[in-house]
Image 1 (cartoon, rainbow, N blue to C red):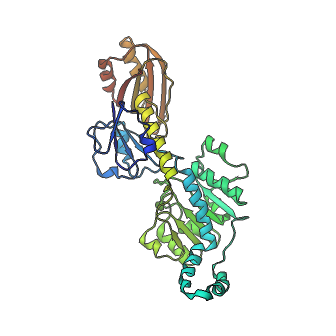
Image 2: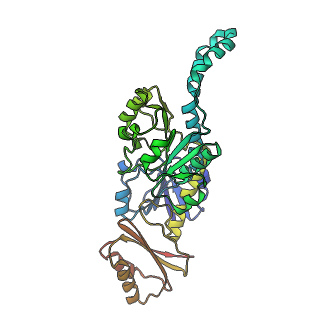
Image 3: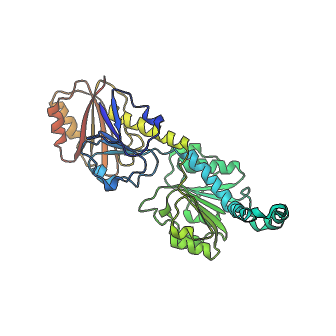
Length: 390
């Protein structure tokens, strides 16, 4: 039986997928095989030695110690695209809010609520204070063309906007789904110089932290608007507040409020609502659970942030899965040990990502524990599991 520890409230639609009798699922569980998490901070807890996988029901994994997990052979999964529609809808709403001053008009309307019969006349006199440009015909720059960015770009096209996208690492799948009218920007600077609106849809990393700063704001159009529903750290906060206060930028809509941004009149702060829909929570939980089950039962790695995608259809009832450092002759050493033990390999796949590699090896004979231990003893091997298909 596999033991799954949940560290947050997880949608029942996901948890119900775990077969009874084959999985034990609880929030308090000693020696779990895997952890299912949303926002709980795993940097501050001790992850048990028994853990083989961590699944995040969401896209961001800043709450998970990725490097430490990789060193222990713990595969970390996320659920890209599970909340894509929810974030896409909020991004469209954010563009409208940044343009039409709907929130300003709403607040002003509340201030005259006690004027009774005067309200209609006051509305007609005061409405010009809250006018703003339409989206149609304007240029939207989409930075990051993953699942969310592609959906935002396509819907912006449908709204009559000119859309330019920038993503030097766009996947083939994303490219296929992107509307043909979306133009490709060769550089981030080129996109920024042409855009009336910029929306960010990329992860936070050492290379993207502070991606937009004073230097980037200087090359943008006056009164451009920026939408950031990805990660707060993508933008230099002090620089954007200055750009808003001096009138360079018209508005900044962010899903990551801080005290400083809340005090800035042109910053529209949303309390981290990007994925806060019941549909998104259900989608992410279902994806996370399915990925965990496929890994624990079949050794399949899909949507991992630290190990390579790896899948192999079962060619026999016996399977060995091996995580190792990406160094020469690892596969050769593994297969030599299997051959010496008279184990015939039916099929094998090896993929690597960065400093780590992952292998799925199907064999005609069951793999005895002594051979498993010999493989574990190879320098550079991180984790070995023998699976049997019932």
